[in-house]
Image (cartoon, rainbow, N blue to C red; front, side, top):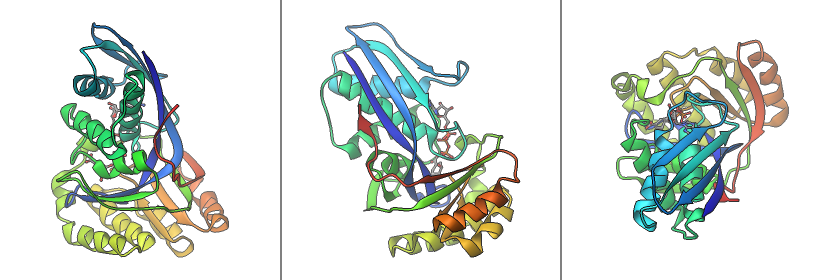
Length: 281
Ligand SMILES: Nc1ncnc2c1ncn2[C@@H]1O[C@H](COP(=O)(O)OP(=O)(O)OP(=O)(O)O)[C@@H](O)[C@H]1O
Ligand SMILES: O=C(O)C1=C[C@@H](O)[C@@H](O)[C@H](O)C1
């Protein structure tokens, strides 16, 4: 009873910490989960190249799928990831989605992709790795493309296919979502409402940039990456609760910004959006 699945990372259009409404888009960097189920026994997890990292999220994902679709199986789950952990690129959503699909694969069963994402969101809430549940990130990673969600009800408000080049800057430091100052984020709710209106109207680039200005102020991230990129890109923002930044736009313009962002410490890389989402392998 073995299963395997992959799920992509995502970048932010609208961070949901202020109002519960969020929006994210899948990008081409992924996490692989492998699950081996046994007739009984405990469920244990392992994260490749991160022996000290917290494995409770992926263990809870296996547990929830077994509770709903299995027969008290135990087993093991391993993740291997290209996505830097706690860097704002939705590593937790990708790990949860890949693990849920790999467990369904091992049980030789299935459910709708939206429901599979909701199981991962429940696991994230149960293990305390999220503030709102992050159904925005989970749905973008699971479905591919761009999603807009109401995280207070785990409801999909919109799903769109986007085909963008994406520039990412990932500084060396890490920022766990649950360490973010949620009260400060709530003070920028009027700007989050504006971002939601822009995103619902399909004006994703401007939505991202307003999100970036508001959340860099609230979470005290630098605004220089935004100001540098703004004249040359369609949209730029701090992603999630940071510290990564993402910009979208014309490839040759992004290459110019890449030169500027490469002077910052950390890793700057060009990628694309992903329309295919999470998949069994
Ligand atoms: N590859 C992975 N395998 C297993 N668990 C992971 C993996 N990546 C992240 N996690 C879990 O997610 C937690 C980090 O979640 P967090 O939301 O802070 O990061 P993120 O999803 O990268 O950030 P953001 O939500 O801002 O994009 C880790 O402590 C770990 O429990
Ligand atoms: O933990 C959370 O609830 C979230 C974390 C970030 O990724 C945000 O971008 C997301 O909107 C919500």
